[in-house]
Length: 296
Ligand SMILES: [Zn+2]
Ligand SMILES: [Zn+2]
Image (cartoon, protein in one colour):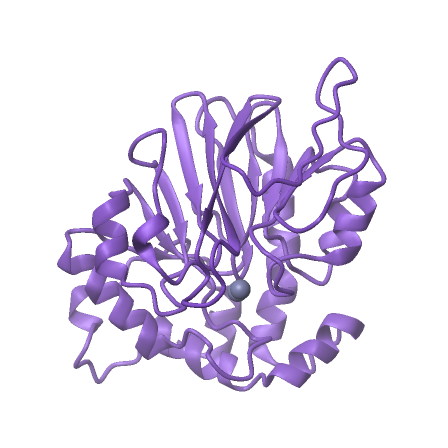
């Protein structure tokens, strides 16, 4: 795959052929993503986030396109049943249902542009690769709910003037438009205990589970059965086999891949392959969330 193909590729939630795992000599799309993202060091990404200059780097161009592509598709999508879910970047997704348009962990240079359109925002935890402060501030000045475990949400109203500020560290169910959102806390790693809010979202009979950064599988759980979609970060040292065995997702999508803001500890292609193998060992076929692609 050359640079042009990489930029044009629209391999939504691409399945990784078994023949390409492990001992392969041939380059597959995971290798290409590794090569291209390797060219972007964390300080360069941070500069791009400020000035929007992609510096002719393919993966920054890909990221720049991702927002426009996903948002354009979401705006045009007619949802009659199953919600549409698009990967923006990292663990950031936008979701369109019949009645609502919302985002989870939205992080992109242009995130603020969605402030007026979003009905609500979910933020898993207080790490800068999972939320955009400007977007939070803007929504916090409107009666829209931002559900998080670290920011209050003063002007959020639900119905009949009842204030349901989105700040919570409890297990709770919010109802906004046609969405029910169940919150619970999970461990980011061995010392950030109960640091991440996992969101289970129910729209009709369809459920989605988004677990942000969760490095310990013990507290993972769903209250509405096997999720139709699990957006999962197979990093932070989480035991992928234990996690998938526990949750049994109908569709498993890996995110937080090649996180550019991290100067170390990125979930690189060798680690992604290892996670794929672990999920497969339990009978689950993961897909990967590529920036800008529709995953559901
Ligand atoms: Zn984190
Ligand atoms: Zn993270």
